[in-house]
Amino acid sequence: MNRRHFLHVPLAAALLASGLLAGCDDKPAFKNTDVTGLEYAKDFHLTDHTGRPRSLADFKGKVVSIFFGYTQCPDVCPTTMVEMHTVMQKLGPADAARVQVLFVTIDPERDTQALLAQYVPAFDPSFIGLRGDLDATAKTAKDYKVFYQKVPGKTPGSYTMDHTAGSYVYDPQGKLRLFVRHPGPNDDAAASIERLTSDIKLLLAGN
Image 1 (cartoon, rainbow, N blue to C red):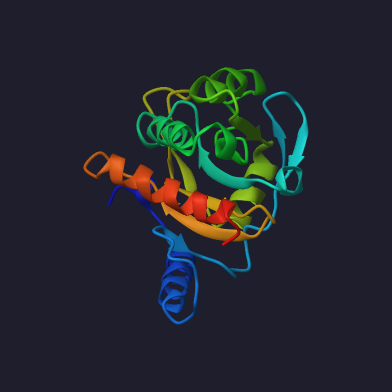
Image 2: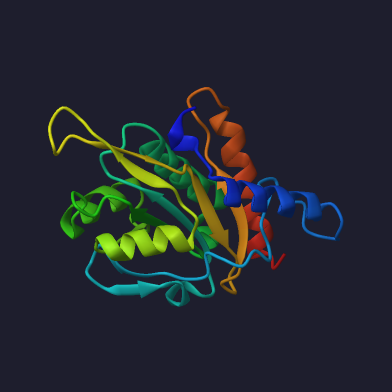
């Protein structure tokens, strides 16, 4: 199993339960996994790539997409950021202005504020990078049920990070609504972009 796409059992079970319940109510026809009502991933307290303290409340009024990754990730992280930039383009300027993409580093030892300030806005100027110290990172990942761990490299600084490859999406009221599994190398990236664009439009419309 590619652990970059690993969802540990409690999260996987919760997502499955939410998906099963989605067909029982008159809920919006989201194309990604509807996790409305799940009782976790409620907030974070981190610092953005400009040095400003941030929490989820700062972005109320916008659809928020939050992804956990690291700048030296060779595959899913840059691919996800490019995907999110494409989604923003498809939304158009007016709707994109009502969406905030957040990138939370799981590797604060290497991902300094200065490095995040270079990396994250390079994909889209509106994107924000977030970081905490080791304890804050661990707490935030636990609160969001995000798995991550170091994989040793040939030298102490050349390690990689296995981690959950997905995003949480909040509606403009700050409520958790979706879990998005981002495509792997053999998946249809264009279809994934269309699904997420459609879902964000539903959330912006008040669904």
